[in-house]
Image (cartoon, rainbow, N blue to C red):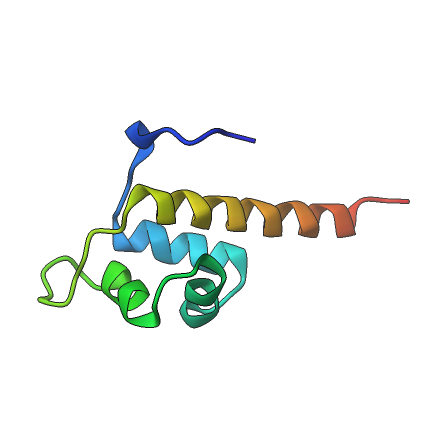
Length: 82
């Protein structure tokens, strides 16, 4: 497990979308799980040249990374031989 380090902040919407895809959830479900509004999540995922775009805070990015990592561990565990 990695620890939070704001030096790793990457608010790029493409990176955030990849994390959501890796986690296997839709953006609405991720927003609910992380306790942010759907509107805020859409703004984090919007292209930076759009008026509605917002820079995703590192705390949200970190939670997305943990959610994606957890989903990956569950998948690997399911594939492990008994």
